[in-house]
Image (cartoon, rainbow, N blue to C red):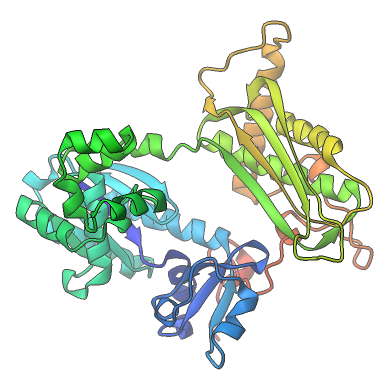
Length: 431
């Protein structure tokens, strides 16, 4: 048996823990630079606010409606997530963190000792009491069925935050009322194809013969079909390892000079390197793109993209920043107003099997750079983001204040709440 613990409207719920005045109100959390909606409360969903809606359109699309909009505060969300995962580990011996708001638990053997329905209800209540976050728990024979169960636990109050699918009759009943488009692993393309074939709910898909599935769909889809029929075959540790990583931003204003753009590109490459090391992987392709403002018809439009292949796959901040900086010089054009830039790393493989270059091998240098990067990661985790950075990552000083902004300060977040749990200056005081 598997369980999935899924935070309800995670980002909004994190904010409501410290802002109880937001309860019952339509609340949205915005993307970087306060661009578009990335999270919504149930009240906002009922209004018809769609994920991805540009922030500036909310006032026009919902006139007269008071919508509470907040900038994303990933420091707060990450810490709240860590607290939830720590509680889950007290309840289950094997936990796989799948995302910031979800984790799977392997409950093998626990059904012989525990009433799993009671176990899930107690865990949800404990998380709510200790952290203040509402979670929904689904339990079933496979991870895909557990995701289906968690959706029912989230939607219907009668489940008391935990739904268990532990018999074939429950499985068929649950899948019969579950839209196939909402099944984990079925995207828009598959949904459209299934609809054209007359498959509308998950049970109709599960009941299709194996030969029909193999004839029309690839292996990953077949695994989803098997999971719907109670056969566990999806390894979330493999699913969760990203095959490419992108860090990009739209600038609050526009940038014209190369060195300012280089600083942004260096920071994006640094973030990609950190994410590679976090999942114990390396990359051998670094891509950089820059673009002007598509919506400014009065300005010249340009988009540049270039790929750089590394001689030796790496996750070193130094290597990736150097590659990205060199790539920028090859696509930068003078006299343009740039609105967006980003870095993408691909060709990702495990860091345990790095193929060294036959002619340029420098094993000692690679080990030294890797050690420096991981040491910087450790210090930045303990002392705060950007305690240690490369010189190329430092933004120029503001002429008015004489101070240089941090990477996070270079992103627009005018509506961000304090970091209540990680910054001593932001701790709530009661008077």
